[in-house]
Image 1 (cartoon, rainbow, N blue to C red):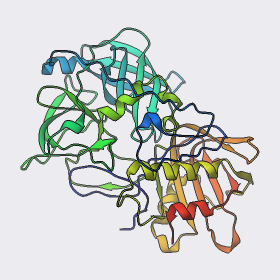
Image 2: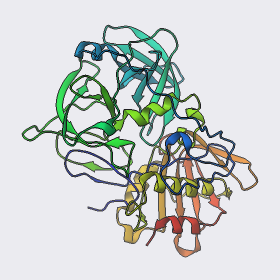
Image 3: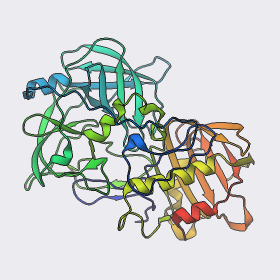
Length: 409
């Protein structure tokens, strides 16, 4: 089976074969962003030279109550998150979420591959409904902070997953939109690695072959403390093959809690690429030795953002199908590819700009294609709806930065 290459890290049950899942960050405007970190930094202290204000204060902790909750109070703090576009149409069930802080905010996980932030609704276990607004996003994981328009819910008690012991017994709470109450699955977990502090590993105990899968499902310790939220199960842009009962990555509640920082929505990762795939191989040293996931993440952030702010005139798209996703997957045979292709999807539209700062278009997704055959110009293909081709612009910047970031063929 041919697969795409890129930088990704998925923690799961069993072996996953996948097209590359690339979490990066991006400047939304047309100013250059230069992330210069050489060691992993907390998300709230990423350095960037751009119009985005980079906060230096430490993200506030989630409110901790003095008494441990019972399972029933955990269920009371769990809510269903329903989303819709800005047209006011029918909303669909997206994920579970938990009330945090003073109870007026809800942490959840949203799959932004096809969804651009619009209306949100929080529905509780006792059938109360609250309108909500997306306040901040961590595009690296899909973790999202919702602000209730009115009212509040009982906030959860949390625990830093860094305090986990290896293979500690935990509980995963899952629920679909038709279930009356959440269901539980016993799992085992270990603390996050130094390489990737955003997620932590879980697996099913011996003899257990299936587990609850609900985006935003909560993982608790045996005292009911929340440790993390279940990530997105799969994507259209990538192939994930694994055993029945596979559990997606668990997003650390500690990293998700950084969304409570009042300046979180000014961070570059508020609208960085949510995911991407490519037909290029990562640098051989990526993720090895002393380089962390965040180090590599920042390097790719700087590279992609520089390309999207140095574009030229429009180029033909007659060689492309209307659905760019089929074009991406047609590149499964890497040796026969016409150059290099990196496809990235963003939570919210990003600006595509010329070198003088003029906004040329807005894009939900982009395909960066370079080193094409027969002297064809390098280009950025884009669209405002998921994988629907709207146009293309020439790349006028130095594509050598792409070659230096990635190990290419």
